[in-house]
Length: 528
Image 1 (tube, one colour):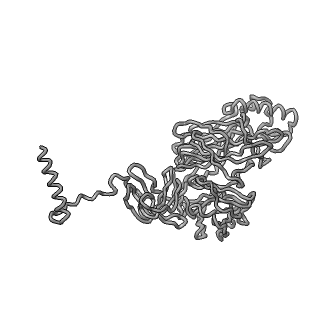
Image 2 (cartoon, rainbow, N blue to C red; image 1 turned 60 degrees about the vertical axis):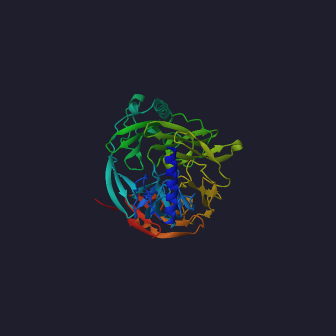
Image 3 (cartoon, rainbow, N blue to C red; image 1 turned 120 degrees about the vertical axis):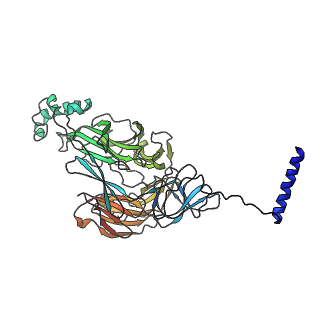
């Protein structure tokens, strides 16, 4: 056996020498398909893709990894949309596509590896909703950047016939009893013309009908369900002011397309205020609400809903507001209570969130602090904030400055509110501060958004005028496109992904698509 092995070994050596010398033919090994074992490509040239990896995607100058010598062109956070130009290529365990960013940069991005997708194909568009005047239905459309609106299944909202006796918590019933006694004794004339006129007993007051279709709604990212906030409240006159007191509860529920409504939780107007260190000055003396939803922000993956609840409170000798964060897990039905905070920005594709606090210190000082955490409040980490910038409002009213789509950057103010800049969380760095466009002071401003892959600001006035501004140089121009001549005010503006187009929804139910690059407004057309 040993002799046979020795001969075999000798023959292998001799064969190798003869092949090298060309005396024997070489038989090449079958070439291995570099795409074998990798994810099946789903993208297509000419289409669009969106980053779905919670870690983002590194855009390279060649379809190779950094270890193999490729240079990083950009880091694309979750939610970034790109245009697919060329591909695919399989190399070094990844499926690569050449893509175009909205700011004009190009590079190669990995669609996925052997186990996971990092990019998904996407049809650029926005879900748009319109409540019918009677409130019984919410119409649903899918609007694309070419201003076409495709109808989708509408939501039916059933009227809720109920009374304080049936719907209110005991704390509201007790407050109603106390307030009506005081009104009858001190200023009975204030009851004239109200729903409480002629109501002489608490039992009678508890049978007063509540509003049946007074609600706010907040659509899920995929448009397949809505969060409903039904306001089962009534105005209660006060002796010392013409501004009435709101009394009652709000029921928060999820509404599915089939009409199923699932109650999540109610909240009363006169419940206790959670313990708080942060305090914010009132902005609107006419605001009669003690408790309200200041922010409702769905996570991009639709698994969570973040609520920022505003509480009016007595802070020493003056009135103030507190803001507390709650997160609802849509899949499990759990309510998480992370604590104080406001100005929510979802990150890591919806598996983490950022939230600001304004912490009160000694001698009345206040300092902004930024925290990132999982939706349940765990793994909380503080992100150090450099001094000098204005990160969060010290008042009840927010600054109205946006997060970027991936929650990796946030717009902040500088020099009071005269300048703005972008703050990047990963390296705690700022873009250069730039002065606000002349027409975009806070009282005249409806909104500001980030467009063209965070390279431009899109400013909108309450009248419907627009301006674009370079994030780094501050150069700005007023667009000739304006909604002022329409005679209706814009309600909200939402960019299509990270490009230069945006959907503008109007108070009269119409809508327009703004192409900021072409300086063009196109009325939305509803197709069958």
